[in-house]
Length: 247
Image (cartoon, rainbow, N blue to C red; front, side, top):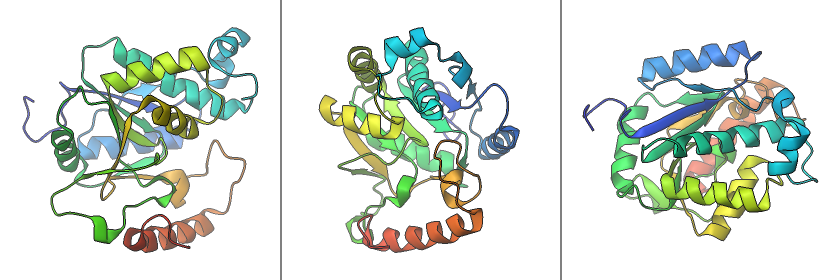
């Protein structure tokens, strides 16, 4: 890594799932948020809903998966993995367009990358606190950032290696996408023997979950104040007790 403190651009392929038109508030937010944290901004805008032709659906999407926004988002993730494999970089970092980054995101991200070790490791690191999933506080170890998990943590922010991208793309080509991308990666990664690692404590938070933005995928749009209060309650109780806390 040439720059010992900045974002490792020479190692990491970075993309943000976005759309060609609309959601200007999210675009402005991402540009502002990433620039002040020192993270490069590259929007991925392929596979908007109008781009998903019957031919593409037949190639990559299972017949029973018909929710247009979720189909579009899933294809964006797959498209990013494919583009990543066209490069010679060892790591792929993917964001959705409603994320907030920790103030020390870059420093902690570099720590996690160092802890991961070999880029040949077949592993995914979930950087955020999607669904308010946390490792219980008593299981945390000083200096340790990555913790083995039994399931995914949502796809708002994650890092994968080349072996993961290769395995996922091959799986999709054979089996097709049959559900929302967060559930899809969990299912196929389990089948493919991919390590699922949670970054603790998380260095990304999802704006459509914490009340900053309305969701663009789910049909349930609760008032943002309600979502914010509910999210914070879950966040702080589950940071102590883990994600199985009754909250």
